[in-house]
Structures are given as C-alpha cells and as structure tokens.
Length: 263
Image 1: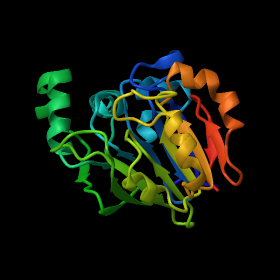
Image 2 (image 1 turned 180 degrees about the vertical axis):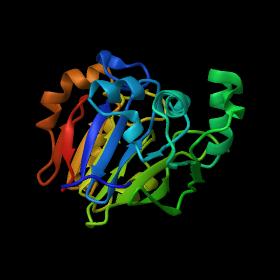
Image 3 (image 1 turned 120 degrees about the vertical axis):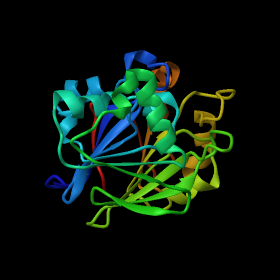
C-alpha cells in the first residue's frame, strides 16, 4: 500500500530543535500524495505522540527516511518498531532508509531501550537501506537522493535529502547541517525546501543560523523555503523575519501541525 490521494504535501509533525524549544516537538515531517507515502522524514523521541495528536496512526506509515543519526532525529525508531510488534501488529514491510551506519545504530537503539526485543521474531520485514551521498533509492513512491551534509565528524555521514514524486514535484530537507554545497545541490530548483534555522546568530554548533540565511536566501533556488528546527528566539522573531525575504523567494516558518502543499 503506497500513496494517498491528491496533491503532494508535507505535514509538520515537529518543528523544534533538540531542546523542544517553545514546547514544540522535535523536527520531523510526514510526506504524502498521489503515489507517495505516507513517508516520515526523521523520527525523534516525540514523533509517536505527535503523530497521534495529529490524528495519524503510526501504523499507517509506509517508510521512514532519516537525515542523520542524532537522537532528536532517530531515537523514536525503537518505539515505532515496538508499536508495530505489539500494539498495532504489522505484517507488511517497513522501508527504512538512512545514512551509512543505520543498521548498526538501529540495533543499538533497540537494545538500549528494550533489551532482548532486538532478538524477537517480528511479523514484518524491515527493508533497511543505507544511503550514501550521491546515491538514490525509491522509497514509498519517492526517488530519494542523498547529498553530503556538514554536521558530524567521520565516520558519520549525515545527509541533506532531495526527493522527486511521480508527478515531478520536488522537495528537499536539510536535516541538520552548516551551509554547504550538499545543501545547495539538494535545494536547487525544488518546489519546497524544508531547512533548519537553529538560532539567530552564531555560535550555534554545526547548524544554520538566521544570519546565514540572510546571505544565502537570494541564491537558494527553491520556490518555497520553510524554516524549521527552530529555537525559541527564532520562533519569536518569525513574523518579522518573513518580511526580510528577498524578492522572488517565498519564506515561511514551520509550526507543529502545519500542512504545507508542495508546488
């Protein structure tokens, strides 16, 4: 079973940074449309409760794609799998795609949260694929291409993601990253870019701040830029910052529960 009906759209399941700033859920997104999904991008610790609060059963999800393996983007996976084993029994396969190292990290996460559940037989297959920068996999109807992000040290290989739907619509996700060529490539020409803005200014770790966006927005080459992974300060400034968008760039700021059409 793949795909909903109608226009490709993104449901913002969570829009906050790792600290749940302003009481929002950790950044994650549900993508669906004709021939697509439902597909989750990232699945942090608040993903299960946020889906349920938005009226979406976790059992309806066909695939999960991860940008990187930090806990606020990935540690919800053991709870999703536990739910599929015991609460909403699943028999159809789950597609799971993420950076190099995902297979090992998934087992570690299950063992640290639920011990021997990692060894129990499941009634569903996990179709797990690791995505290296430059590779493309078809996931729940979407062509998903990985681009190198700049957020973690080797051997970690975090990703920016570019996706193409069957109808030709394209979207991109920055994950967590500094501004880099991988992000620019992923965003070039897409209908929607969902990208982080973790602070107003540096220092903010290996993240993007609003002061970076002020420089980069005029050349980002995306029809609509949706900023997310927001700190409390950025969220408080969002209404003012929208007015700073350069001509030709549609700029908005994410909030939990927001439904965003693509194109």
